[in-house]
Image (cartoon, rainbow, N blue to C red; front, side, top):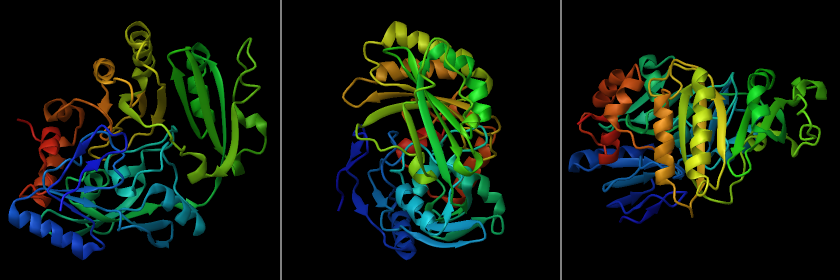
Length: 405
């Protein structure tokens, strides 16, 4: 029977006709085939961290929670079940002497959900998490199982690495991994003008770098991370002095830990978020306009911070970083505060500068506005219709994103 689903932030709630927790791939195939035969939609769900309505359905909601765990690792690859949470994945890989190249700020998501929506971290040399996907196994809309990798159906890989769950239900994900390592994280506060002046230097001389801007006091918190085995002394931190300030000399935080513990942060407070991916050259002008509008129009309600990060370009068809080095701006808002007027105003700015919305966060674009932003859009749609000819996975919300009226 159906049961009420509520996402992480609490902004999305619905009751599907049926809630299922398949324990293995055979049960996933049976669910898909039954949905196809009865004309019902089926949507997979991981941890429910996304605040966009990607998983909403009045049909079958299939949780991947029971499909969890690391299956095997071999020669720089690790295969994991699709419902494995990033926190458990990090620990499992660490126990095997392995680690992922990069992670995002949150480890609450499942690996399938995180890669399907383009979750990302920061760093000029790192793509989003989907770029670490070397292969997947998925159950298509016909109930068939397809392996996709460099050796099996490689033509499908640029679509399957980030698919919004529109091509099928992922049951396994194979990741490119490396020997485990530790990161040294440091953060400090600085005036926004100083941070913007030194942004390129900080990005190019640190493995990972991002910053928060706080609208209320107009300060930033700068965060940098470097591998311990590549940072023999403090000289490599590349944190220029802030004139007239001791901020850099007195770091707010210094922390050393394995990558899966150093990068993600524990979140007690729930929040809503809008994030857009921009051509890197558009960041200065876009951020200046975001800052101006927030200070003039939204400072009274904008109680949370604005996060700026970077992502390397990739060739994944629906990736927000497809074909271009990317800068991201995210506006966060406590769930107890109004967000829609504020976020819609920010979206207008982001669109003005060629932004693409994060698939798992708040935005108001439909297929008509999205299609021009992705050069391989039509190729993805053709593949989706081939793998899901009856629209088993095409819920009304997903149709608004993918199908032009």
